[in-house]
Image (cartoon, rainbow, N blue to C red; front, side, top):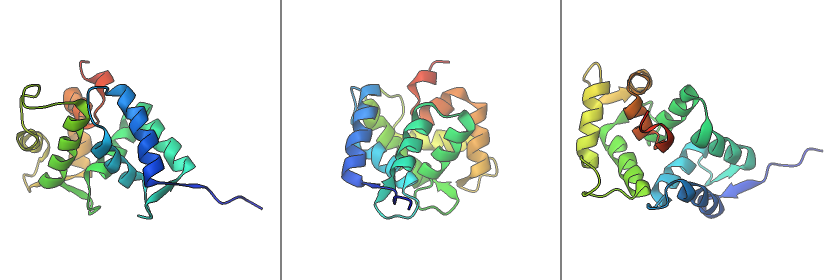
Length: 159
């Protein structure tokens, strides 16, 4: 008989994930960002993910293919799961990224709200105030700096 998949609950997952992320971002607080990562992989909203999902989360967030990372990122930014990204959702994730990077007013040129406006100006091609999956994917693929910032991917930040 097949063994049921062991589920990883929020505290254990977050602790392990924060350890991993903290090694990439030693000056920041990865807690908020990890909460959003967890939500993205907790497909059934059970508060737990199985070990395979945990490995997938580590793999995608640390070294997945660009399209795979963008697919995942879209789901993370779409907090309410309605298929579009609203400005309030984008702002919430950017705040979490800033926190993880240890960013503050002295180290960033734009507030999370101003950064969100800038992103929507670039990506919201039909100007309806929300980003569709296509607008998000196309916008990120067309702008390497935006891609790196929105995925909190420091390895590509200066390419």
